[in-house]
Length: 475
Image (cartoon, rainbow, N blue to C red; front, side, top):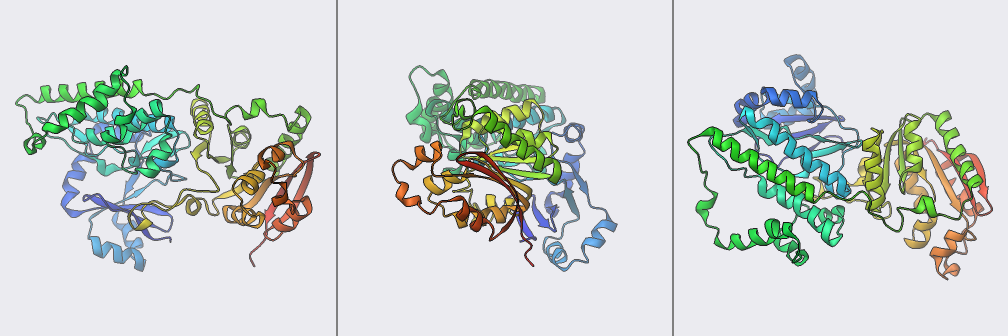
């Protein structure tokens, strides 16, 4: 659906998607505060530095043109807002349940940085959730302008701190000490973790377990309604000092939970340890993919089952914007840190193509599914060393694999065929060869030709071939 509300929880305003543009309606009761907030020097600087998503305020001439559209007019009449913003579009929306641990950490660090920078202008953050952040390639960008509010200079309390703990510190804590990936935490707990959820993972010799979990849990038994009332101090400088001390303390806690980049998994060393290619085979594969990238010049590439991103890197170096997905959070974390350090045009996400992120949120429509966001997004899709896992491990029929490739690409597909005689195929089939007797290169070609024209084919070795295909016209 092209016209839809994509954010509506904030009483100060809402986001509306219209013809692939994002508009923010500021509710009338909040407009004066918004004007005061957004004109502050600190916010202006943070926006210019790219920490906060840019926007433009709709002028009368632009608005008059929009109001000629019947759908936009109905929304405008319903909300009756005098302030409408058009936001800069971030190319591919992503959510915390698709992030690696380092991505969540960097989003948390950005949130604290912003709060610290705006305190001198008597501004605050009324919420502190990772859903306020979207990654643009490997850079977190804060997108919720309405999270900023005028702060009472005499109030030393940051009410959003509890939310910061639930959605940042506790998920990073259980990742570090219980090895629960952050994407799984948010899929099962979209609003973060409660202290009770983490209690089983508190060790006797972990100081942070006491300050972050055990002590707050103990003190919560004595909580009374008056504890939530504002406690204004006479001296505003003391109030600011207390807030800055809280930020400093929270930064220290966050740093103690920083994910290790040296973590490994069964797939993180795949490129170094694989034995089913020799050096010449791999060069054939690399050369084939590079030739397609040079001839097709795709603006956007989706690398499905990217592992540590060897071919994503090749696509990015040929000028493509790359979305790299894999169901292993460790390999995605390694690729994310590489893309961040080298400023590469790559967005790595923890997504399994056999079990992609579903629609979530209110009425199952607040957060779009991965397939909805990725549909016809890419000019070229990579499915390399992948389909045997889908066929054998996930029991996905070949026609369904061809169908989803057709859904995701606007044009091209590079796909690798793996024969049942391949050593890796034999390894994962585990004696169930009789279930896959129909797999052959001829059947593979016939199936994909339902949706694609085969443009180029190259044998890699005795059991592997690589194909470049282009999507058939729907006419």
